[in-house]
Image (cartoon, rainbow, N blue to C red; front, side):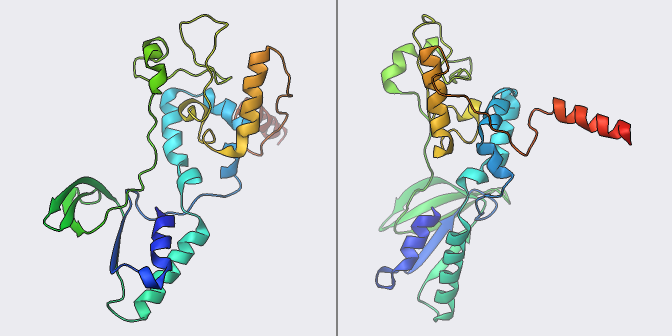
Amino acid sequence: GAEIVDFLLSHDQTLPSSITWLSSRAGFLPMDNSAFSNEWFAAPYVDYFYSLSPERRSSLLEQQRLASDGISESLIQNIYARLYQLDIAGSGILHHQLLPCRRMTGLCRNHNQLVATLYNADVNRIEHCEVDVVIFCSGYRTVFPAFMESLRDRMVDKNGALQIRPDYSIAWDGPENLRIYVLNGAERTHGIADPNLSLMSWRSARVLNALAGREVYPSYRATTTTAWKNDDAFHNLLSVADRR
């Protein structure tokens, strides 16, 4: 969404008369690209995340979302500077509204204009906005592949979700030697790094090793600064405390 807004603002010759930018979040928030957050994109964390309860995994994904889906700092600065430039250039060049905590819930036509129905989460109120053009930047929704529909009942749980093993194979009731592997579809079980390219080679190696039944590609030997599985860390902490 931010990239589209930046594009619309970038060309004086095609500058719109007004822009209304909605976000369902509390603001137009930057991507979290800090060092410790980047450790969520390391192989040891994937295994740790998988070991957690479904409820905890779901909660963590929401907390970590900005590490994947936030706006880059440079893009935020570009948009802010451009709006400031247009504001001081004179009134009437561009009218802009940035509306956080809004979600569009409806759209209808009123003569030559569109009327968007907005839900304001801050005040629990419905609002309306007249516009000429609507650009949706709502992302992608995971759907079950149509070509696998006949197998759906054999591989989903009571909530309709795929049960995916650590090696990215689907837990289903078919023959054990016939496996179906999922890549870029296991965020719910393997964490926020799943749709990203950063661990693609590691994921592919894990699948290939599973297919071969042996370690064709060496497993990771990496460690992270953060102690995800804290048994050893807790033991070491107690040892230090005892020595004191």
